[in-house]
Image 1 (cartoon, rainbow, N blue to C red):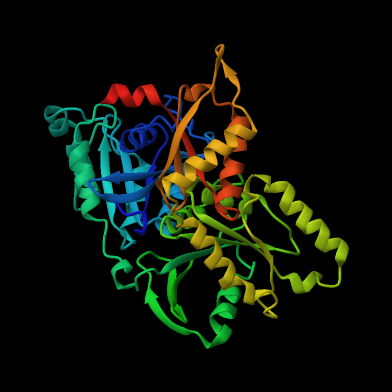
Image 2 (cartoon, rainbow, N blue to C red):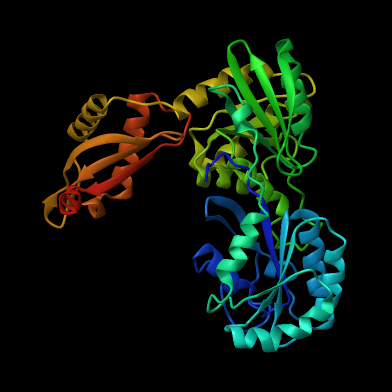
Length: 449
């Protein structure tokens, strides 16, 4: 699966204890969702990126939508379903084959009938053809087009479900229509932070050629921008909602949509409100950028509102620096979408970040850099032996990735790793992007041969 593909959001919906977390773990091949027979045990929404037969999607376990197990089950499941219908691209509705149809199941099926989105009605806890014949028959009373018999725990019917799910995922995208070398830039921010105004201001600058491309996922608008000999794809994502519209502890589907858009971009631009300062939602999105290994630019917007307040300016920048010490490489620009202040720095900054993000280096230069770094600061002793670094090479770009062969990767202390990362940044001019250094034992390479 290309990392540039749009990823649909697939939501798991169902009453507590019907097997949502077990199915989540089987699909993601993980144990990220806690599995426990106690109803309501999934307190927070869990999600993961999934690839099956070259089809990709983001799977969400909605068990945490209503984290009070004392609430009436009908209300609980109804809230789940409504949110999934509104925000997800595909819904997997899970029912309990052993327990049979419940009033909550009837109500949710009725709600799901009103959506045009793909809905899979799954009857779980069926682990054999004999059990399928016995247990699935009552569910035909629901009047749905198709029922999927499944055992999330024992994998009965699992491959059939996954094949059917992937058939419903559209793979058409717009990447083939883009000019060679197009830089993909995604904009992220909460509502009212000025994201759309910012994009409009940038598009109006220097009378650039602008053409619209319809996005392949909901709530995303792609715009191809040509400036001189360079092309950019601007991805305007759905705004991340403020807390309060659903339960306080919930992570919003809209954040996951941002995560999906992040998989398509080279550079992520995160807008922060100068008046409000940086929020928890902002740091979450920036955390996703780091996890995805994307280039990052932070825009402190609405700078015009505090242009005459030096103390407020200093306080905002100190707050951003304090909350985001782990992204010290990211350029931070003070801008105003309203007045255009700072906008002219956008394209040079995007270009600089992208060049570093895509940079390649000759192995000889990398080995000289490693040798100089080791000479200036000797590696530590590990298990009575001096740590040795034999050679290094680049193994990837976007972001730049390097491997260093050593006599013991376990002996590389995080402080020495940080030292080498800083030396590579300085020596290679990679001061604006994340870089990755992987340590491997030379002995393991010989064993493989």
